[in-house]
Length: 312
Image 1 (cartoon, rainbow, N blue to C red):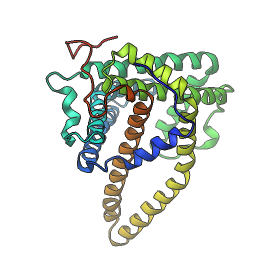
Image 2 (image 1 turned 180 degrees about the horizontal axis):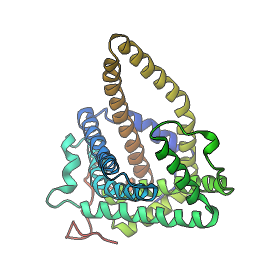
Image 3 (image 1 turned 90 degrees about the vertical axis):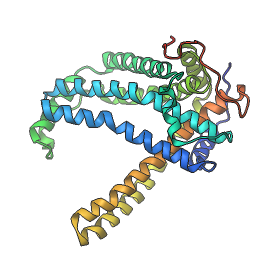
Image 4 (image 1 turned 135 degrees about the horizontal axis):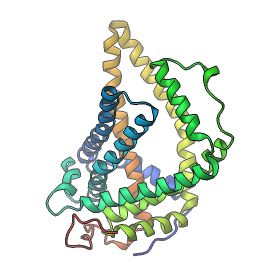
């Protein structure tokens, strides 16, 4: 299975298709996105509960956050794989329902491989992050600890800007280079994870496909990122205005009514964002790796007969 380059405007096509996703089976796609969104909130809820009970210091809070992130990877990876397969089914006119996101957990599923790729990808994030901090992050951890300590001392209130210490000199270089590497790794994750979920590739081969596929398509991925960043500014302003007007109108009747009206709008927006985001991921994979599969056929079976074994 090989990867190939796409045109420079392919990223815009992925985004357009992401917005059009669900036209064949909206109930399945949006219902599955709602399930995925609810599952994604569980690690954050657990993190807040642990922090409220233990009330750790800055180092302890960072440890709790890391544990919540690990839980999120283990929990969400099979659901994301199931969602991508559901998208593939709907795009190829195969029967699908929202409950299909649970299929990787069922007997004969391959949740282990999906989790394995997520964990391996996280390890690469950590290694690259440590390398960046070693080169450009002198004094950054101390600065972050001071800022978090100030936030805890403020008790949820605003921090006096005069009390915030100056940022370390290498922060600008760290953010710039880190953003470039994060964009590259995002492409690796999108292509590689879909190769595991849809292409039936072992984790190590899917990772290689992700690296090569991203390297061949840096221009469309970069253009897609630029368009999303630029579009998020006016779209964010419009959404903020809409939420503000709805909350203001409801607040005239009762303060709780404003929040009650905003909540379903916010949840609906999040579901749409999930659909578009994973739609872009799916179409990126299909253009870079997907043509090697027969259109309308299901994803190849995992290479191992033991579907729960993590192949590296």
